[in-house]
Length: 101
Image (cartoon, rainbow, N blue to C red):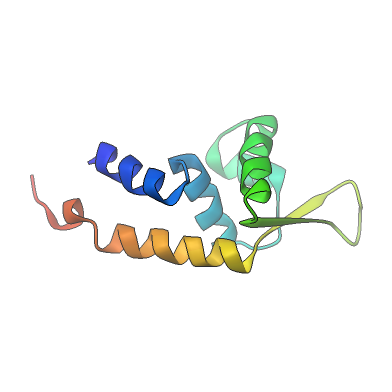
């Protein structure tokens, strides 16, 4: 099942962790990198690599926090939201979703 999920995401040009972070940020727009790292149980530098890739593809927007410019707010772009919808639809209709073992 996990392999099928990875193949589906690969066809969209995204890794499982990138998909997870994108879906997280769609649900919690304006999050800080550290809060994403904390919720994923990962190092902020490691999440930073994921964020840079999402930003490079145009799926994520980074902007300075108005109260403190040392913080960067992360928000999904329109292009990223479209990808998130595709990922969500794919997960909802995945063949393994209804299989019972």
